[in-house]
Length: 128
Image (tube, rainbow, N blue to C red):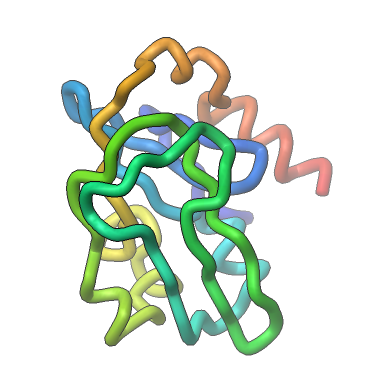
């Protein structure tokens, strides 16, 4: 069973969001990294880039597949986890910690209402 920490928000496309003030820390879920398998490459937006809710903001590749990474919220990218360029497998080891991908300054905080809580996300992945 995939880990789904309480207190985070989730997308149906398997990104997680941790809110810190007006900033969202974003990564992919344990379910997503398990489905992908060994992650070998990550392409993320540059700091300063504008991202739109549920639009592609990057790509993640594993030995099995390539997958788009969607921005769960709109705003400006404040920081990118550049360690993932050298060690993308960090996502497999610690997707909710050291494997975070980007930090986004929220431009439309109301969009949070459209995301899933841990219970709704657990229900979504248990149907799969």
